[in-house]
Length: 116
Image (cartoon, rainbow, N blue to C red):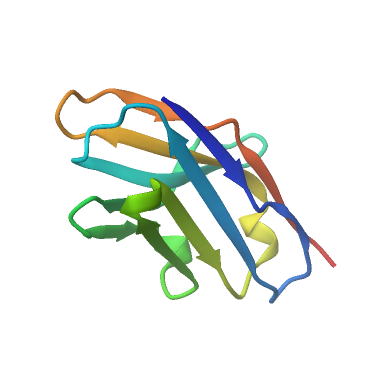
């Protein structure tokens, strides 16, 4: 299984970005996909995750600003990030976890920088 993340970049505070994570290879249909982030000197933290059944969890710091969605037919997960803040600056990693085997897959990371 390979995960290809895209959509990161530099944006001003208050701006928006949309991240995409396309999965290829054999993935069990019952899975959880999501985004985590890691800022310099900090631990990796959950941003948002969505199950194949549609259940969604958000990290407290992004609730009301970020929205996660997925296209199961295209094995792609999206993260719409609005009203970005400087503290959202981090490397964002996409993740897929099989809910059958517990196998865990990670993308290569995409840099999001929020700065004026």
